[in-house]
Image (tube, rainbow, N blue to C red; front, side, top):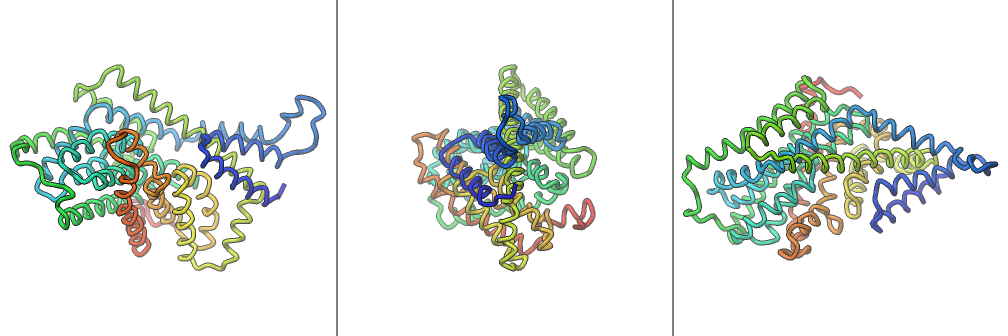
Length: 454
């Protein structure tokens, strides 16, 4: 049944319900079933059992089964478990303070240490909430004691914490690969240099800003600095093992030695080994890691079930067709289409999180990429960068709420929002740079796997 008006109503109602605070996954399922019942309706039921004789229930069942058997999604719980184990092994706090001491002579050394720690921990975790929360408890008090300006310190933590959805092994990229039916290996390779570039731009901004205004981030007292030998020994003990583990995981994926799921299993085992070596592994911490992994994995799986059901009904009603016809009727050039798509995703980042944007709205643009001759991996990297803004853009800047949740009355929400704004501008600058130089995203995957042919 083609009924584009009902499809658009369905989409608008979903946005309203999400803004009212309804759970996303179950809102998607409920709306998919409700509107799907209408879409597949074949007449009044003759018996009570005929009420359930509607294709929407078969579709929901098939989507649930498809999610459960999706090989790409197997990597998600394993990467999550690795991140939670590393978080609870007290490796990150050692890494942070070692980096701080090593960077003590640089302007904004605490902020730089926080950004590098966020980048490293993001690669081991991929969970924005976990990174921002942990660094809020670890780095913010240290910066507050060092008399760092509040909004400056909070902006560093929130921006650094969002790197986890871009730098591999990113959970977001696994989800994108499953949605767009792209190779997760190519996506990981394409994300390496954009992720490093964004982290590097954050560090450069901090150094320039503090050099211009040293009062934002006073230098550490020299009497608090341990001997250089102790600094480098601590750095060797905390930085090298975690970095080696991450490089082994990513290297095995990019080198074609293991699938993402196999590499994630190796990473989970490596995380346990590190926790044992650091003598910080307890049965309680293992249980917590397993529980949090199961909780996060269930959320992702139900999001997929709901989104695929919602998207299937939306498409069946003609929603995708009407939006595609509207875009194509503008006779846009490829660069204009890219700007329009990224602008829409950017605006959606104000009220929505990355998961809703990625699962519901990005698939609307994917079928048009061939029409405009756009490399899907290049488009994926633009989207991945753009989705950083969903964590940094008020009023729904989730990284700010994560930080506010752990700091409580130590800082006002508006101070955090103020600290986020420069990093939001840096993300946009990064997108412009990548558009001007597509090789930032495409050179590495082409080098590893050969040039992509559409």
